[in-house]
Amino acid sequence: MAASCRAPWPGERSRGSTRPEALGLPGVVQVLTHENAPRLPPLDFTDIDPVASPGSGFVPLQGNEITFSLQPVALALAESFELARHAASLVRIEYERGTHVTDFDAARAHAYVAPRSRPVIPPPPKPRGVCRARAPHCRRAARMPSIGRRWNITIRWSCSRRR
Image (cartoon, rainbow, N blue to C red; front, side):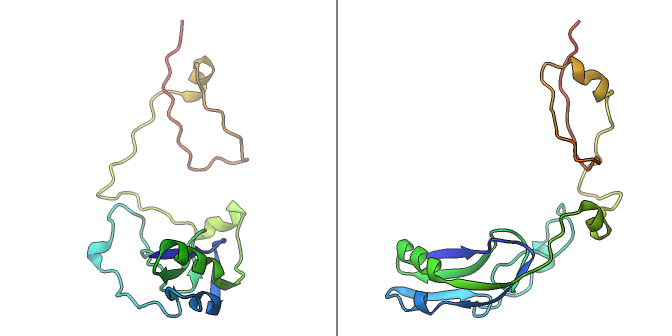
């Protein structure tokens, strides 16, 4: 059985792990991290999703970079699930603090720009009508807090004007 240890924050690097307490428990087989996990072959072209945005696929425990919150950084292997969970709770991971970007305008220079046409994805539908003019007459309307600028948010209105 196996239980994973997960990183609490994205954008960091795992410096190393301490796991002697977990390995000392009877019934614990191994605790895998990026330091001792078996190396997997790189993804080939047949594994790439043609609809997904370009980039490399995620393969766990192959590097020390943490790309998303709650990413698995260690895997405790034991004879029972309860023992694996207990061993996973004893593993301590040290992290290098990364820089976090919370300003959208600052991160815009590094944003992914999609190409104009992609052969697999159909183009978006053309706008139908004026939503702002119809919104006050709808029985149910979406209310969204304003963040100062409009980002890529699509709201579909499905209402009929009562007369």
